[in-house]
Image (cartoon, rainbow, N blue to C red; front, side):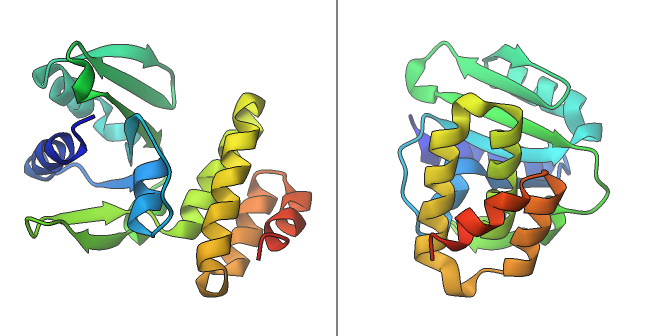
Length: 176
């Protein structure tokens, strides 16, 4: 997948169209030092920007592969362009607003979800799709092993409560 090219073009267009975002998933984990192979780029955007996203991705030549109330997945007929997922949030303030900014090689600002928020999204993924459980727990473990002392543990505890995974907090703590 041509990550640099795709990300650069998408980030420029998201900014040009005034669409706030945060990179989430495996690519976001990479910004925090956790390496994992991935075949897609995941963005979190506001649900109100969905129509802008659909037009943007169509303009880039991506086909709408999967759609739900919470996400859209796009694939390109050129395989090296990979797939791009957009997850939607209805919250006024949250992960997007608390994201941090990294600078790309070209000096471009890149908004990346905080590690605690990535963990929260992984917990949500486990709750919503048990088939993802092994991969998501492994991702959570990798984040905690690398960043454990620097994480906001109260925020993680809050995500465990919100997702109904109170026992998950003890499991996450065991990764330290």
